[in-house]
Image (tube, rainbow, N blue to C red; front, top):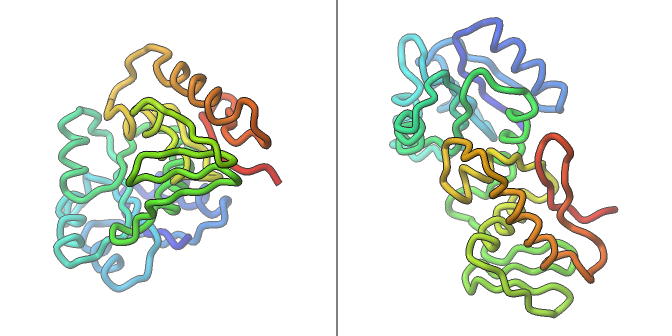
Length: 225
């Protein structure tokens, strides 16, 4: 992907750009909000990674101006502001995801991959497929090998999220935020218990296994090659 990183911390920007480069991404760096806005308007980017606290023009205003100009490039906010209201404000300003500093690079890469695969707002798929698994988002129906699978609402939302991020690692935090709308860790096994039930319904008795645990990181829905 071609990524615009708007970050005024030179050292942090360098580390992030190197990490993204190692994953095959081309990264353009802007050191302040005004330069970031100009780059985002003139360049053809697949993703914007934007710090909230920027000189000249803050990240929230930058993204709001892009959205007002009908630029819908996905935005991942990076910030040290960890409060729930801070996150909500960022999302309302037009951000697509939010990562609090300090963060692990594996979490950054997982979120970048997820946003990179996300359909643009006007082209959201309503039928999702992986091998013989078919998810009809509009009718809320799931079938595998022609057999209907009955899921609870939360299980369906987990499966839909995994399907939309097929082949990419989805972390526990990403599931909490996007399925439960939790912007904190409830310190329970709520994710693990729901995933266990979902895997039993989707994978048990079928071949191949589609939902995989990425040890120490999260989960991935993929069709083995």
